[in-house]
Amino acid sequence: MVLLHVLFEHAAGYALFAVKEVEEIGMLLPQVEESVLNVGKFNSVVRLSAFFPFKSAQGALENINAVSEGVVHADLKLFLETNLPSGGKKKTMLGVSDAKLGAALQEELQLSIQTGGVVAEIIRGVRLHFHSLVKGLTAQAASKAQLGLGHSYSRAKVKFNVNRADNMIIQSIALLDQLDKDINTFSMRVREWYGYHFPELIKIVSDNSSYCKLAKLIGNRKEMTEEILEALEEITMDSGKAQAILDASRSSMGMDISPIDLINIESFSSRVVSLTNYRQELQEYLRSKMGQVAPNLAALIGEVVGARLISHAGSLTNLAKYPASTVQILGAEKALFRALKTRGNTPKYGLIFHSTFIGRAAAKNKGRISRYLANKCTIASRIDCFSEVPTSVFGDKLRDQVEERLAFYETGEAPRKNLDVMKEAVAEATEVAAEIKRKLDKKEKKKKKREKKKLEALSTAEGDLEENGDAEVSVKKKKVKKQVEEEPEEEVTNGLEATPSKKKKRKIEAVEAEPEIKEEEDQTEKKKKKKKKKAGEDE
Figure 1: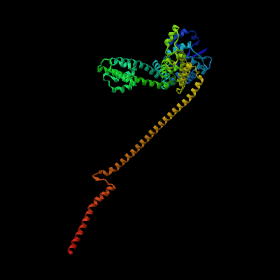
Figure 2: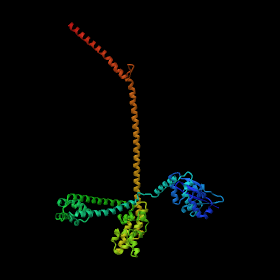
Figure 3: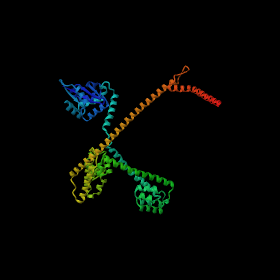
Figure 4: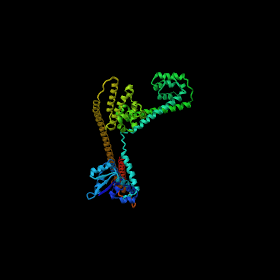
């Protein structure tokens, strides 16, 4: 008789269920399906054998990642080895929902695995009544565990690499196309609006951005003088056009316009000029971004066309997965399906048509060069997607190959072999990659040195602060000692002065000795006077 155990993976942990009467259940599948919905009947069929709860959210995420990839985690292996019965008369069989995981368990633990059939129905019932089969687990706790693990699993699966951010390229090329449409419509509005006042300017200046700049500069055409010629030359980059604008303003057929209308036209034209300036900045940003994400594709076909290919494919990885035949007609899906429906000629090119190579080729060679260019674009996109250090070496070599193929179609000069070109490219790419790695290592070393210097400066500053604090404490102690020493000298106890210090004693003795010295001096002077008197009387 076979003893069947069913493994169930939940967000809370692993559960092992023992199934009763396997042979009868295998024969009565419809009854099993009915008993799944009823908890009481299902408890008579299935019994919880063991439960292993996950210790942390990180552990749960690691286990579920391993299950989804069909790998046996160490926790699952330990759980099955400890809880599955080994030996005995009854043969043990493990039921698993995922066939890939079952094959891995069979290789790892040498178990007989069963998937599908009865096992699928039992797992469906376990999933339905799991919170009631495991003691201490409520439906609310089980749903919370599923929600938390689902968020962390999705976050781990959808990893976003900043260095290869092709989403930014997709958004920027979409914005660039939208800006082109908006600038075109706005400049046409300025032409129509300002054309009432100065209709001759449209024939002289054809560029939209320069027309808007001129409309903002000129304003009222009647107020134009020869002083404005230099400013006109700066915008038009042509002295003849500037002089023609000045002459046309003097003999214009346009209507007069009020100052308020001119103010509105000037403000709107300034908005259009600012939009054109922003478009140039956005194009520079797109160029730099393509140089970081897909340098080979940008070097081969150009930044704008390469960005359009990536945007149409959805990502650089999707573009790298496409074959050359798909890349060739990417962007011409409507024409392709219309041709298939009407049994007409299929399109030869899609977005690739905007590259310069197809425009330079002759009409009979456009299909050939588009096929060749699509082939090189797939190679370039795959190199960009899967290379560790992005360089434009392969893109430059592939571009040279397309140029040689164009020359071959025109003149018949045989191009170089692909093998020789790729060998040269690999040699150059390894040198460039080594240089880039050296630069990166130098930058990292400089960063580490800076961090060390900062840490040392912080440590020395902390030490100085501590020393200054100790010095301040010692100064304070000395001051306190002086105050303590001076206090008993100034204190008066019971109306009597305290014992004075040595300096004060000397001062007091000197003060007390002063009257005695004065008395002695008076006596000596009296004696001298008496002597003088006696001497005078004797004479």
